[in-house]
Length: 75
Image (cartoon, rainbow, N blue to C red; front, side, top):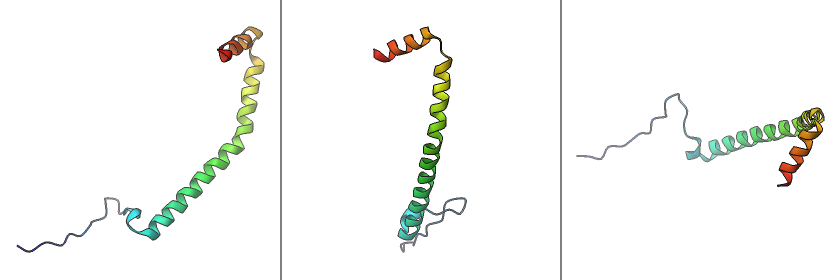
């Protein structure tokens, strides 16, 4: 019997693994870097709003709740 040549078929959905082709891998890495940068930027933009929400929540606590929270944090 003669050895058969195997041909890789792309996975279902037509997508191929980008890591076998260096150029595709570079494009995929760049795309992922841009996506991560977008999420970091969004998180930095939302941090002041989150702090305001925490401050507003803290302002509504009673004195006893504040003291209990401080005691718990100190332990």
